[in-house]
Length: 161
Image 1 (spheres, rainbow, N blue to C red):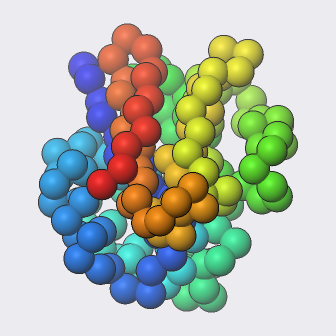
Image 2: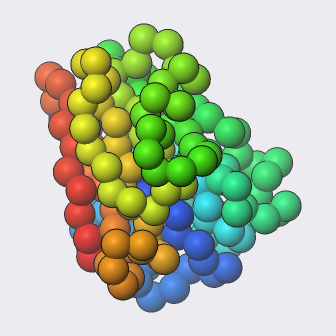
């Protein structure tokens, strides 16, 4: 069975805006699960995402209202594949090497924090950062997100809305 996961990070919103709602109704409208990798900022964004099948972790910019509601990291098991979720910390350079030790025997690690899209396989582990939904350091506000597909293996795709 194929499973499609919409991956978001660094939305940096105090409340859902029209671009997030459009993304959830459009490109992410039919995904099986939505994952958010932290820096929601306020609980209203979490409330919207929880109306769908959802898993998330907290980020360094999340307000007090969120800190007690979300873990720092999470491990998903889907169709026999193990996927680690973490926000991350520190600079963009070397992020996969800093976060790999948080998870044992995983097939993929999804992370945020750097605001930069990243998709690479290192030592047979797929690392994905969908990039920032807001505050994109690579030019403007491209509303970045990712799609993870599990069907006999794991594949990822970086997207912008």
